[in-house]
Picture 1 (cartoon, rainbow, N blue to C red):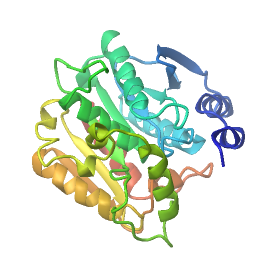
Picture 2: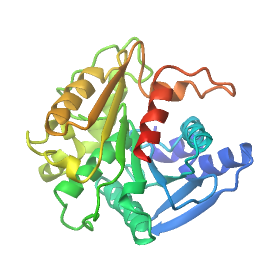
Picture 3: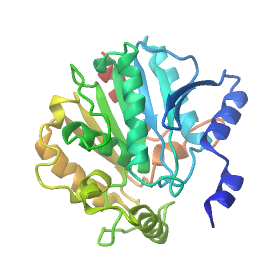
Picture 4: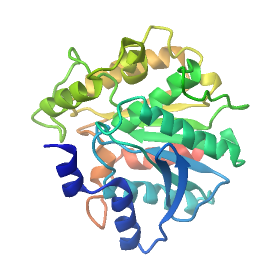
Length: 297
């Protein structure tokens, strides 16, 4: 199915956001960033402490409403503990309209907007799921190894944290995919999506888009730019082996990394709790809230 048909069926990220905000009786607040990117704010635009959310969808699909509901829940839980945060959703350009690294350039624009408007790096946490988790790692790669043609990021202090939920760490053939009959995302979908994204990309971008194939020391010293990391996966998701293998290699170079594998969990499992109006939380969602709360204290 081509991009125009998918857009017609699933909508665009701004449309999903506006519809979701109306449903929750929240004001839709949009900040234009340039580069055809924008921040869509969950609730009030707060700039003291900020969570920058990079949504998933294989780089080809818009954000879905249940992910906004999840992060709104996190926001409410933090506020109940006395921590008020702004959550900005990055609306980036989808593939194939623009190939990678346009999405990285737009993520950099979001970070630069926050920093240039007075948000201290120690008050910024960057989070993403699936392809959004991949984009978080691409952003980290760019901080460590600035990509020519994209503005470098050089914060004076480390960012508070980076969280990757079920991150896509390998897109090319050879990845270890299991649990095809158990996961909500299947092996054929992952392989087809990966082929589309990698088509025509130069080898120089491999480490940015496929972090599991990066050189052994690629992420060494990441902890000097980010205080701590969280990587989670479900043990019943197709990409579980790829994710956990990458996570443990990453942890060897960056000790402030927490890895959580949810028993019987599938891809982006915490979001499944929010398909219904009265969510029944699994074990991972409270752990995510705790981890983010600690990062702001």
